[in-house]
Image 1 (cartoon, rainbow, N blue to C red):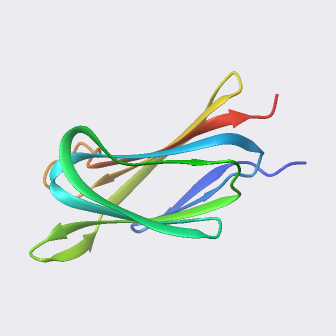
Image 2 (image 1 turned 90 degrees about the vertical axis):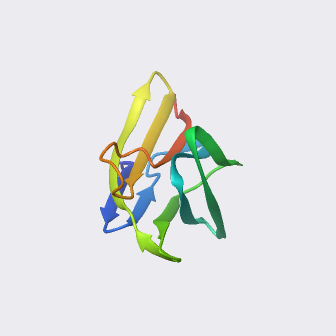
Image 3 (image 1 turned 120 degrees about the vertical axis):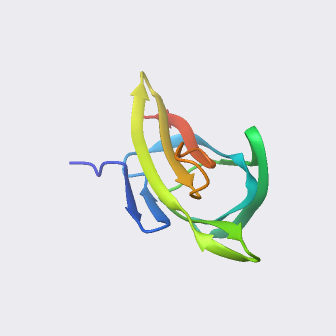
Length: 127
């Protein structure tokens, strides 16, 4: 039996396991807030950060991966000169044929729409 893909959210950290083989993985991080948002990501052996602000799904990072087993993302927002933890929700994985989508969204508390950060992995599963 193969492992399942899952997202485990603890506080402002999301751990993602790509249990079943995903190919052609794309990571997109978008903002929908005037407040500065930050996402620190460890994807496999790579670590990187995306920081930005702006409304209307403002793209602050787009990255491609040939394959990936695990990723961990920590979400914060700037408030009074320091970064505070965001509140998270997750959805997926969703399958449409072999296309897969997994989403984590963050809220900084200035409203209640849970779209201040949209963190999205998409790719294809095995046929």
